[in-house]
Amino acid sequence: SGPLLQVREVKTHFPVRGGLLGRVQGTVKAVDGVSFDVERGETLGLVGESGCGKSTLGRSLLRLIEPTSGSIRFEGEELTGLPPGRMRALRRRMQLIFQDPYASLNPRLTVRELIGEPFAIHGLAQGREREEKVLALVDLMGLPRDAMDRYPHAFSGGQRQRIGIARSIALRPDLVIADEPISALDVSIQAQIINLLVDLQRELKLTYVFIAHDLKIVEYISTRVAVMYLGKIVELARAGDLYRRPRHPYTQALLSAVPVPDPERPRKRILLQGDVPSPLAPPPGCAFHPRCPHAFERCRRETPPLYVLEGGHTAACFLAEPEARPAPAAPPTTGG
Ligand code: SF4
Ligand code: MG
Image 1 (cartoon, helix red, strand yellow):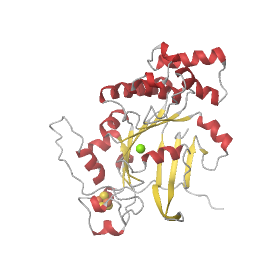
Image 2 (spheres, helix red, strand yellow):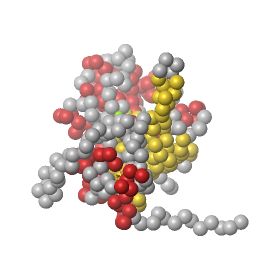
Image 3 (tube, protein in one colour):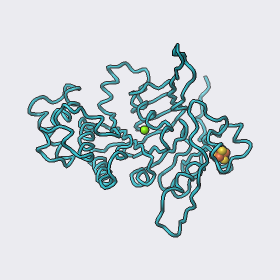
């Protein structure tokens, strides 16, 4: 029945104002023409350095930030331009898990109120019924039952993230966008939260877009992985294929920094020169060329397209061109 989410050529650009008059001085192309599908039940990992646009993309998919252009279809229904009422109704089925559980929880509300809030917002389950649903969520999250009457400050970071996750899944969404859900947590409890997310996915048949900069965690949890650089997806493949044989030099560099215990796959650390350029003034041609160890003349002039390789692996690098397969032919049109 088609992918759960179809994203086509989405751009989210922000004007940058400055000076005394607050004039527009430029445009940040935070997300700059991104296309992919999210299949039902999969986890699509979305990785890249901070500032590459992955959080903006995550929010744009739910229209928490309004995309500038492009198409986002949820179960075939176009989200861009959808009236607010219909969008609110759909949001029940598409939720965000935040990076910082503390900042996302109102400190004046008890856990009962915090987890009950999604039901209240959507006018679902009153009184005793709501109490039971909230209690069931508290159990599901592995929180103690006496948590109900306590406030966020009484909990550890990991427990706060459990409260945040309970809010996000309370209404049984289909799609959950998790924006670095463990990067604010102690390493010792990161695995517990990952395992909770994996269990919830199985029990509730959730589809995840999992945003992270830690490639190891993404490999563990993802079905497919998309790598972002300066607002664009530069590589997308099944997780196993991407980690075994990354095609884009940027992915190769990111992966070279991940320690592997396997002596048969020794990796040489590839050090990238320089920082991520400002998205206000991305380099011409391939935006990665100033940092790419393989850059050649053409890379400074032309922007590489996303080449389609074997197994649906895609990579936006001229070095992948010789391997590229023709894109699937368009269906024949019947003349009229
Ligand atoms: Fe490097 Fe050129 Fe490939 Fe860009 S297109 S990643 S600069 S080799
Ligand atoms: Mg972010």
